[in-house]
Image (cartoon, rainbow, N blue to C red; front, side):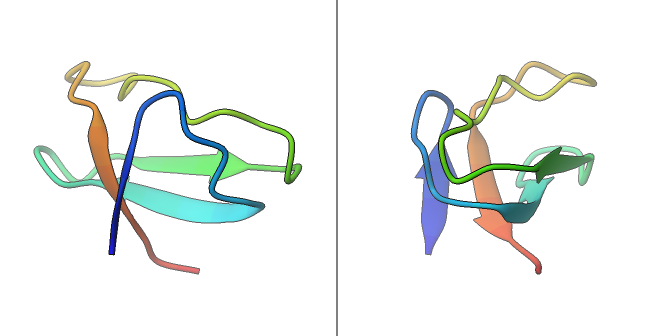
Length: 47
């Protein structure tokens, strides 16, 4: 399953589908930001 910037997919670690950068959300209320490395907006959950 993929997730898009602006969604609130829940606490966990997400990998950018474009460059592989990891983004960690610490709360279920956190929104996915654009990738801090390449600004891509699609992610997959890794943990």
